[in-house]
Structure formats: C-alpha cells, structure tokens
Length: 195
Image (cartoon, rainbow, N blue to C red):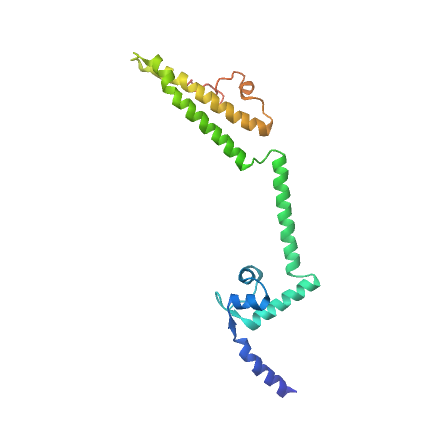
C-alpha cells in the first residue's frame, strides 16, 4: 500500500507546481475573470504572485468555498452580512431624507442656479441704476453709500432665496419674518455698520 501512496504523491507533485492565470481559473470555475481577481484580493484565494496562481491550491480553496456554501457557512453568511449592511445604509439614508436631514443634489443645484441668476441679473442692472445717482458726485463717502444702497437689493434677494430654500427643509419661517426687518441682515446686523 505504501508503494501506491508514493506513486500517487509523485504523480501529484507535477500538478503542485502547475501555474495558471486568472483567465484560466475563470474558465475552470465558470466565473468571470473579475470574480477570480476579487477572490484573490478580498476572499483569501491563494496566489503565487500577481496574476499567477497555483492550480492545486486554488482548486482546494474553491472546493472548500463550495462546501462551506452548501453547509451554510463561509462566504454565504459573509455575503448575507454585506447585503444586510447595504440595506441598513439605504434605510438610514432614506430615513434621513424623509426627516429633512438630506437634500437631493439636484435640488441644491437648482438653488445654486437660482442664486447665480439673481447675482447675474441684479449685478447687470447695478450700473444703470447707480449711474444717475452718481453723476457729478466727487465725495467718496457719498459714492460708497450709493453703491452700498444699490447692492442691498442683491444681498436681500440672495438671502431671501437661501432662506426660502433652507425653510423648505427645516420649517423655518420666511426670511423677512425671521429677521423681523426684511433688510438683508448678515450675522445679526446690517452690513457696514459697527459691531
């Protein structure tokens, strides 16, 4: 009997050094090459080096993997845990969205687009509005006041758009009501006034 075992060992010794690549293993196991690469990276399938695999060791590993799957152990429970974690994360995101804690990216983009339109249209009209009031002015204080007064409209419109957007998600009152004056307040005071 010992003689047969030695003969078998010698026969399998040649197989132990047989190297294959990911494409060959994918064909052998009936999976995609990416699956083989994933198994080598994440699931512990043995490899000799990058792109080189021991056929015997990989077949043993795959056989154990299949046995674990059939008996309810190993990768199946790991996959199940991954699925449960992904479902939990999706549920948490949906709950946060329903609570108003998350805002859809396209809605934020819409608000930013509205702000860009406000800036563009109001800044384009700033010159024509201020020019008649600035004709003949030489005093820098008066010029600054006129420009400040004209830019208030831009600040008010911007603040109102941001507050309306935020109010939609957090139940805040309209911006003018929330500030009690409706005058483009910044940080609790009117811009360009002493703190």
